[in-house]
Image (cartoon, rainbow, N blue to C red; front, top):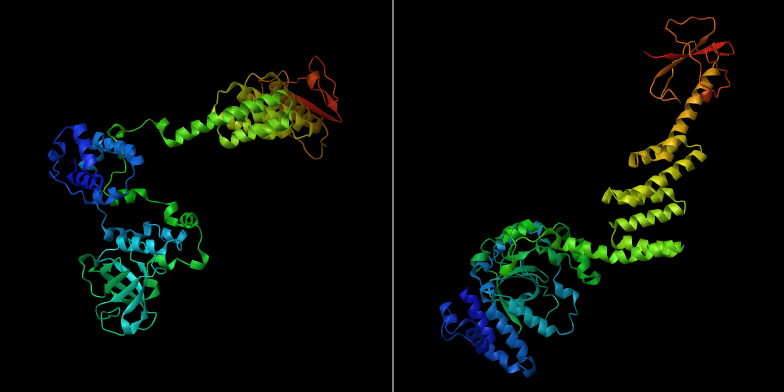
Length: 500
């Protein structure tokens, strides 16, 4: 186990934690982990002044948890990799540049407390951007901290002084003008006095590649330049507008922190393995939504049966809003649409249901009946092509659907008869020979025929087999003979010739 982590925990929680540790894991176990026999309890001694008796039981349970789960909590393999600031700056284009969070809270509530908190987090060697306010006295106004630390200092009463000679951007001595922007390095901090001493000479190794001194406004950190105190939005609005937030590049963040993107990280040993797919948040949410939507679907079907169509639509729409993949809800709403005559909306719902469950019995049945009803409506509107497609779609789903098959054959029969009628009305001077392929006419469903139209006095070179037009297809007013005699129409002869 990590000795440093255990020592810091004991320093914070004191002798009560050590006593429970010995009770749970045996006397001397802490020393076997490498912790000194007399750890530092300074932080605990400062904290215990504020302890209350009512919280004693809670502290006891917390210490027991630490002792029992010590192997997991203080595992040395869980030591985090320190992120190098320079490496973060190299990948700056992948990092969302958001204003500090303190800008979006009530900054005036306890400004002194906030000031002390920020000063405690600033260390020697950190970069701070300032503005020259009194050039003669070397006093400057802190504006913000340098990245990766993001702190807004412009509204805090922090006193900052330059202790070294002033340098310009090229490292040459110069005199500041009022409102010059300066990049400085923190030399010393006094939290109690709310004072910072700065230098323009790099004293820290990590800043050796950073030029200190006077800079332009464009050289200020991006997050500071994006701040407009008169137009501050919500923190969430800033975040959602950030290009980096919409494309978080978590693979790169894993790499920076020395983590494997395919590994599961947790403090609990029992959870260090892959989980079943149906236990992930997305699947659990989908299951939860499905169960929640089921109640609305049941209510909608009940309203449907009672004839309350408005209430039924409300329940089914609510169910499909919760769970758009609810098959039963789609089928029920499709049936409701079909009953009200909205066949296209019904077909759309049935299609969605069948995509989710191809073998859903009611979806296939209702889909077939709706397509037949839609085809009949198209026939009434003389939209023969659309009607044919509706009947064919029905047969694709239910191949043995009798009504769809008969309706489709009736359309084909009427269409074939119309072609014959049109041919008999052709003028001899306009056409001498016309070929028309008609498929599956009446009893000759399996034979292809050629219908030849010619003037009575002309002879055709094709071998003809004279056949009479069947009575059932004689929509052109012709008379047929059983012996297969020719039928005359205004000086023309129609021959049904078998195409060999």
